[in-house]
Length: 168
Image 1 (cartoon, rainbow, N blue to C red):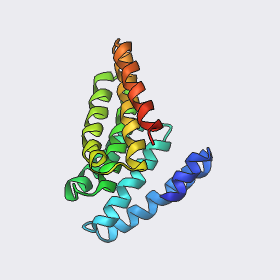
Image 2: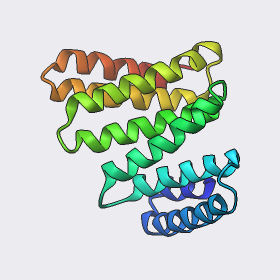
Image 3: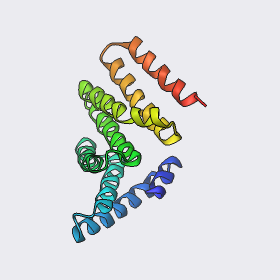
Image 4: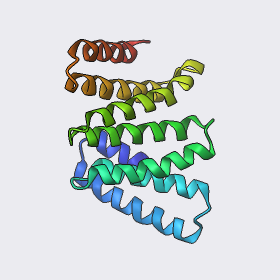
């Protein structure tokens, strides 16, 4: 999954899509071998996240699949910051895909849910990965608020996200 993250950051989307498909295929194969293996299920959830993230079609449906898998993994290990963060990322992705379909309230609720999941980890120990994920929730919240006709609340939320990212 690290390779996918780097490929996306470098803007190598064609390569990332190929890597994503290979990752999804490998994770599916592992799940078929042992559907109860939680580490493989978690990898399968992350593979589905990247599949949805890089999809050009059926993005909302694919992100819902990733969210469902990653929610299950979070419920098994709610104290795991990494699993919670991936679940939160999937909520934001699903919300963002629905926002593109003008399902604004749905997007806002996903952003708020993700924020609520991440905040306890941030309060316990601030770290860069959680900072970025938390800012992502706030950006989606702001976009949703703006589309709901509340530009002041949107700007305030975006300002908080900016402050969070700029904070040392």
